[in-house]
Length: 115
Length: 116
Image (tube, rainbow over all chains, first blue to last red; front, side, top):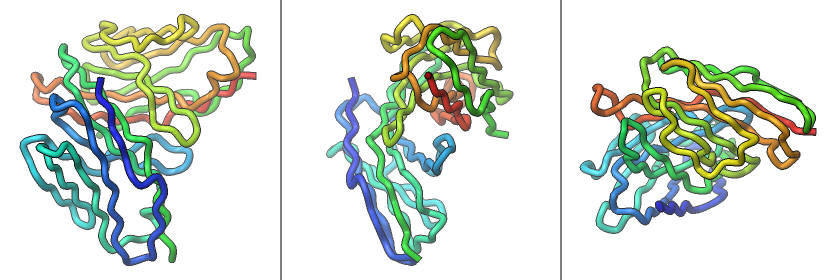
C-alpha cells in the first residue's frame, strides 16, 4: 500500500517568516495530493491540493509543489501569522475505483508561529 | 456548501453500552468515509461507502458496525468497545470524478469518544 513520510514533525517560526513542510510518497499510482490543516478540537480542513499533472499551485500565502519523478511534494506558507499555528497533514490519494478515493496521511507537522 | 455534520460532538460510554455516531452531508456526494484519529496521530481509515455500498473495510473489529441508510447519511454503531477505542471519530465525503466531482474529501468536526 501507499506510505507517506512527512517532515518535520514540529516547526517553530517567527511571525512573518516562511514555513516549509515536505512529504514523500511511495506509490506512483497516487494522483492527488491534498494538504489539511487541523486546529485543536476540530476536523481536518482542506487548505490546498495538487494533482499529479501539475507541478505547482498557489493560493495567496500558500503554495504547493510536486515533483512526480522524485515522488515528493511540499507546502510553503509565506508571511506566517499566529492563526497559521496548527497541525498540518499531507496526504496521497489512490483511486479506489467505484467512485471513492483512499487517502494515506503523513504523520503531521505541528506548526507554531511565534508573535 | 461544503459542510459535513456529525453528532454527537462528545460521547462517553461504558464498555457494555451500545451507541451510534451519525454523519450527514447534503452536497450530493456518493462516497462517505469513517476515520479514527488518536491524539497526535493522523486519521486512520476505517470504512468507505460508495453509492451506499460498503467498498472498503480496513480490518476493523466487529464491535464497530457501519451503516449507510441513504446517500446523505452514514452511521457508526458501537457495541462492547474497549478503553483503547477512545479517539476522535471523523466522517468525510467526496464526489465521484465520473459524476463531475473531484478527489477532495471534506471532513466533519468529529465525535470525541471516551470509553470508560
